[in-house]
Every structure is written in C-alpha cells, then in structure tokens.
Image (cartoon, rainbow, N blue to C red; front, side, top):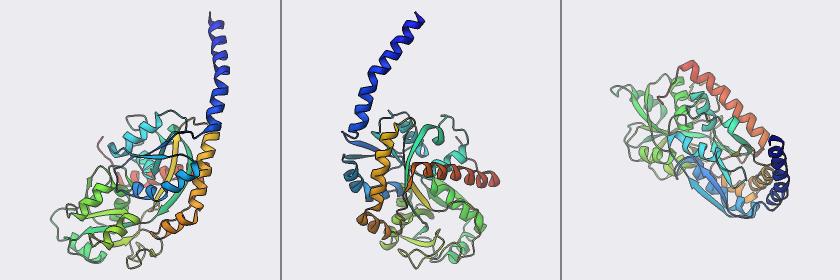
Amino acid sequence: MLKLIRWCSIVCALLAMPAIAQAQSTYPDRPIRFVIAFPPGGATDTFFRLISNELATELGASIVIENKGGAGGYIAWQMVAASPNDGYTVLVAENALGINQALFKKHPSGFNPLNDYDTVGAMASTPLVWTVANNVPANSWAEFVAWTKTVPGKFNYGHAGPGSVSHLVPEVIIDGAGLQAIPVPFRGGGPAAQAVAGGHVAAVTSALPVAKTQVEGKLVKGLLVTSAKRSPAMPDIPTIKELGIKVAEVDLEFWWGLFVPKGTPEPIRAKLEKALQATMANPAVRERLIKVDTDPSFAPGPALKVKLENEIKNWSRFIDAKGIKVEQ
C-alpha cells in the first residue's frame, strides 16, 4: 500500500509539471496584488505610488495596491508569507522588516523575513527628516533641545508602530543628543504624520517625500535630515553631522524592496526582478524620485537579502546595547 501511495504521488507530480510550467511561462496573466503593511499616506505607500504605473507597464499586468496596516506591520507580513507562492502576491516593504526582527528576535508568531520570503530586488532609498509641530516653540534643532528641557517630564514623538523605521531612528537621534522622549505609536506613518501636523505629538521622523510636502505646506517644521549631506530637495535643513549629534552605526535612511512568499519559482522571480530593474531605470521615474531626494538604487534579489541580513545585525547591536524593549 505504501508503495502504491508513493507511486500515485509521483504520477500526480509528473502530471502537474506541465501545468506549472505553463503558468510560469504565461505569468502574469491577471492582476498582481502588491501589499503595503501600513495605511495610505506613509512613506512606503507614497513611494510605491510614484512608480506603480511604470511597473505595471513593465509587467504587462494591472497592479492592485492593498494597504493592510496593523500590529506594526505583522498582519500584512504574515499574510503575504502565507499566500500562494505563484507571484500574484508581492510585498512592498521597507527596513522595518529588519528592525522588527532585531527588536523582537523571536516573534510569538514565529515570523522571520529571512525564512519566510524570497527577495525580488531593492528599489530605492531616501533620507528621513525630523519634523516638529507648529505649536512647538522651536525653529531650529538648538531651540528644540532647549525647549525639551523646559517641558515637564519627557516630550513625545509619534511613530508608525513598534519596530518601525520612524520608531527606532528617532531613538538613535535621541540617544545621540542625550534627550529623553515618550514614543507614541500609531497605525502607520500616515497617521503619525497627521498627528504632528495637528499638534497632537511634538515630533515625528518622516521619509523625505512625506516631510517635504508637510514642510512646504507649513503644516510642520523640519529641523534635521539624516543624510550625510544636505538634501537638494530640502537644502535649508541641516544634517545630523552638522549639528554635532553622534549616532550609532545603523542605516538612518529609509529603503524599500520587493519580497514574495518563500518558494516562489525562479522564473517568476526573474520576471518581477527584470520589470523592477527596468522601472527604476525609467528616466521619468528617476526624475520623479530625484525631485524628492529619493535614490532609485535598484539591486537584485541576492543583494537585497544581504541588505536585510545586515539591517538585522546592525540594529540588533544598537537595540541590545540600549536595552530597548517593546511590550508584546
């Protein structure tokens, strides 16, 4: 009986092979769902919408963007990991994947991006901007630091959820500047940015494209940028180095990449990677991104995996050294 079962399994697998090969050769033949782990208006959502039309053209298929916020990104991350590995569910993610893994080490869900995803490619990166509410009486970093000393207790800052880029990057800056602050979590970068614009929190660190819109609209004030040099998109804002803030050796910029469920066939990953590379090389896309100081720095799947591994290692060092923990 055991031999018969094994034989049937082999026969079924052989019969399925032509159908699988056919599906890979015709991919994509229906809309592809691109999942973002945070609500609209945040850094990842803003960035991906800047390139989605060209990416759809390169893929030859419609793109459906699904914002699925909650649990600091884990709801979307786990959903994508558990989706069929047929190339029709793709995760648009940022370095929060690595920061979260460094923060939680072993998440109760068992989720681990290095084990649960295949990497497609890195897309781009951009600096972050420390912004403050208009009701904060400070127009420079020095004035802001002086103000924090007059506030009873600790000032607060908003972020996109525990382990997000906008949660841990401010912690690095706060540590380097010798300040104390109360982190206030929101369901994503969009809501956090709205909170600082409404004066509900004192500060938020946002990706430059988001911050630029708010600063130019006089909704907030930008006090520092995390890039090594001043941003040509926001040249009046000084860098961390200019301000003399000594920070830990971690990546203080926002970067994005595409991920698919583990076991996605190589031909499908190759088609996604090729389309992504062509999109990031598109002159119209590059011009659009450069205007908001976003570097369209494509890198193939293996390079993205190394980048994620380094992110986890470097952030683990900082998080462990500072004893940063989040209640689960």
